[in-house]
Amino acid sequence: MSPETPQKTEVSEQSTPSSDPSTTLALSELKNLTKLRLQAASHAKRVAREYCLIARCLIGGKERERLEQTAKMQFYIDSSNKTLIAEANEWAAANPGCLPFSLELAFQQSET
Image (cartoon, rainbow, N blue to C red; front, top):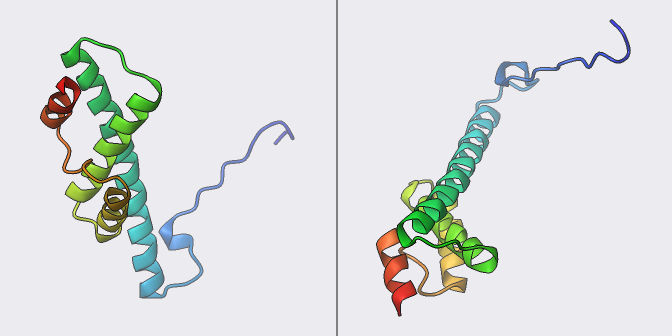
């Protein structure tokens, strides 16, 4: 193999040196959290696009960030994952009035 050819290294749960069930459970929880966080980010971007299409406007900057963050936190609450729910509740305490969130509520707030 030439030095320019990168080698691929694959790591799987089976390749972990510990067969401790608590380690496997923690790894599984981490994978689930990562998956849910990625889904939440994707969901938040989709909500922002829908809002722009329905409202027939473009939003950017701080307003878009706020909308995406609020949609993401609502996704966390709806996920039924205790860790994400706790994170969303902590965020909601620092940002009163932002949750619960729906596109309908977002339109009502933009009209006032």
